[in-house]
Image (cartoon, rainbow, N blue to C red; front, side, top):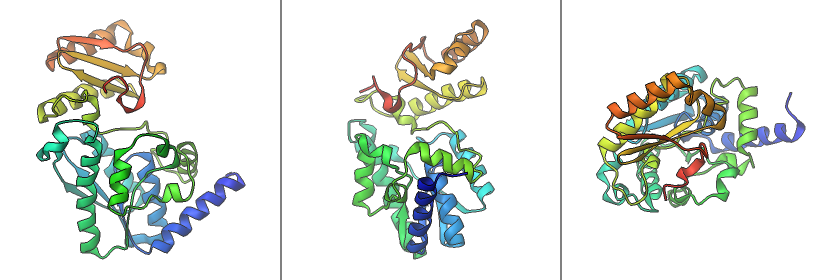
Length: 269
């Protein structure tokens, strides 16, 4: 049973989305945008559509989740293609990388919104995101994207609690991020680097790890894993399989970062 304050926030979110009348949801399959799509579908039915933009920076594993969960919700879901690698300002991989990526996304979604006659574009930004340096949020504001989770004053913890209450199967899904975040700033982003990182992380997924990143430092693969996954990763037989697998992808050295997983690619800047 929800607490009264949390129920009030959910009611506020429902009112906000209902008042928007029709929305295009920037939907990645992560818990935040999934929750927005779930409530938007509840309130607006076919006047809410989730749009997933697929590009070389978007892991196939995440696309699989997005398709499955949208189907569970029963929401309209469409997949469109884009390619940030065609944007030189993005591939140079400086501090404005996320701004250029999100600008590309919202430009695409804006065209879809206009074509469909939808009233608003919405995203999954929540109040916890506001304390970070998020160039992507600046891009969203420039394109008029609304963030109903912020407007309803919802935090990540509250979103997970509400998602569980509403029966979303991905309520406890670890946060994901675009594959380009695995490449150090100032190192050009290429299709080959993105593909190698995606294959490396798919290997860890197959081995049963839940929360991890493989940071690409050229010859070195630096694995960040959640502390609760660290002992599993360092078990001798798994450690040997992971090392061999990553070396087959072209890494010469495979390391495990003893500080564990840190959001935002800390240490890559």
